[in-house]
Length: 121
Image (cartoon, rainbow, N blue to C red; front, side, top):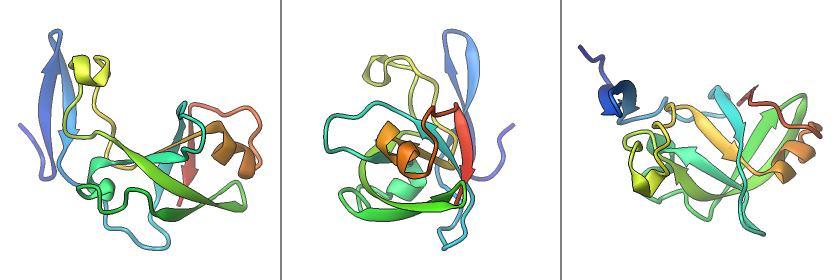
């Protein structure tokens, strides 16, 4: 059984939730900051719904967390609707509220050793 906005997906016999949308975006939309490695000049990836068919690609967003703010450029999608195949390195789909960021973004938020996730808006 699936709930509105997401569907079950499978990989290697495991069941994963896949999302077709993300929470509506406002200046106080809650999200989870995760760490990722990006090529030089890259800043971050958004969940599929927020990435919005590339409409936010190469645009800037302000991330608030740890009582600081940073301006970051969106360079990629953290896929919430697919995954679990060779094109996604067999990773499970992202949740629908992920902002995947480089270590530079974490450093700008005053976190020198990025943790797995951090609450942001």
